Amino acid sequence: MECLCLVWALEKLHYYLDGSVFEVITDCNAVKSLLNMKTPNRHMLRWKIAIQEYRGNMTIVHKEGNIHKKDDVLSRWALANTPGNPAYVPLEAEPQIPIEGINITDIGTEFLEETSVHSSTGQTTAILEKGWNPSLPADTLRKELIDILPTASSFKIMLDKVKNNAKQIINDPFAYAKQKWDKSHKVTDFKVGDLVLVSTLNFNNIKGPRKLKYSYVGHFVIVALHGTNAIKVELSGELENKHSTFPVSLIKPYQPADKELFTLRNPTLFTVQPVEQNEDKKIKKVIKERRLRGKNQREYLVRYRNPVHEDEWLAESEITDSDELFRRFRQKEGHKPEYVYKCSLNYLI
Image (cartoon, rainbow, N blue to C red; front, side, top):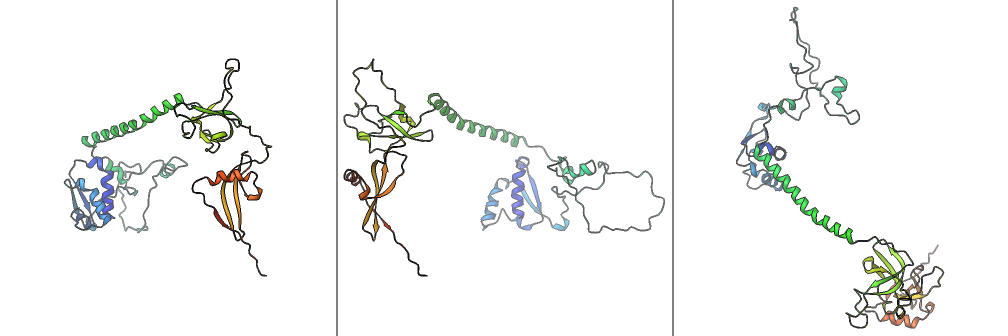
């Protein structure tokens, strides 16, 4: 603990001790051999490294505890009455009656002065009770403290400048990126049911030369919103098997062409049916297959065209147009059925 106290004190008093020659007086003889210890443990080694920069200027002196009379600057013991204390009352006349004896009634008792500021009153207990704060040992020592060395002061200023410069270097790219983003970014206001065009930037299987393909295809109907950054559309045609969720950066609103200006414009490439809440359950595709152990039965997880209906497991007999759906499902790579155990337990009472 004495070694740890030494490390803590050197860290706190670094600005006063930097470049100075000083002594450390301790009543623990083990601290004296800290710098010359050959096989220290991991704690002692870490403390030894922490005080290496003071090795040439610091001298550790051992003094026995019974002759170590230094005041504890962290103590809150009140000082004796002195002319500098408000509690000091000088005697105006010497007593004329001889003293017959001294009766000490508080042997072994000690008193502490509460000098901490209370959070509710904003004042110390001594101020509220007596109207003044008592002087403490730390008050007498503060008057004798040396000033900060010029080298330590300049080092502190230099260190603050380096930290502020590094912080500014980190913040400048973020501020520039935010400015560029805010300049070109537009808040999307898509709603379910809107017609949009989808970018073909990531579509690699569209027929024809890549340079001649359309930049956008559609139009498609928005069926769901995933926050403000992505939407889900109802794909059709040769894009039906693609993932139907796109970021808003690849989406732009569909503007119908003016028939008077574009009389020869071809109709849209894909015919999209609008999403309705009362639409019957029409299966879009088969997602998974599983086999029930012991029953020789298969079930398929199907997805409906209308996103209002959730995915569900159906038997093969319950799926309409099963031949075409199963053919597309089995063409997927890595298709393997899952095995599920379904059994009932009969309890004997």
